[in-house]
Length: 117
Image (cartoon, rainbow, N blue to C red; front, side, top):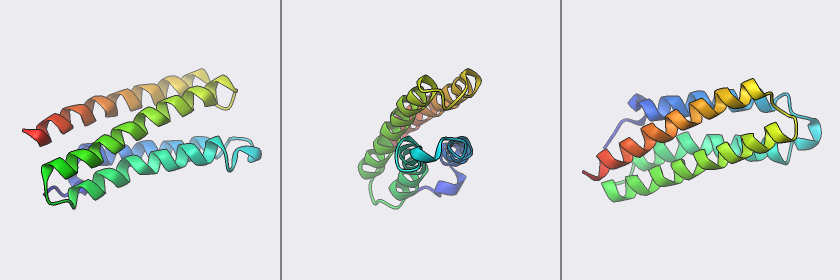
């Protein structure tokens, strides 16, 4: 069993979620229940599923929750692409988010492999 608060992937997921919340605060008010909500839920899901997975009794179960977190990262990548294309975020914000998301995806995939060993 892992202490999720000590996991670098969990810490980075929390950082990403914080950035997402800061960015969507500048979205138009009509997006409150649309893209803004989707982005916030997906970003919270990444760290939450890592934490939930650590409570499971087997590595197989933990890996399942890591897979859900990974899926949420790909959701976020898609949603920030849409946010950029409709003009809600700048190219610089998009590139910074892409970089952070891709780094977390790499870390998550490597960690998933280590859990199954």
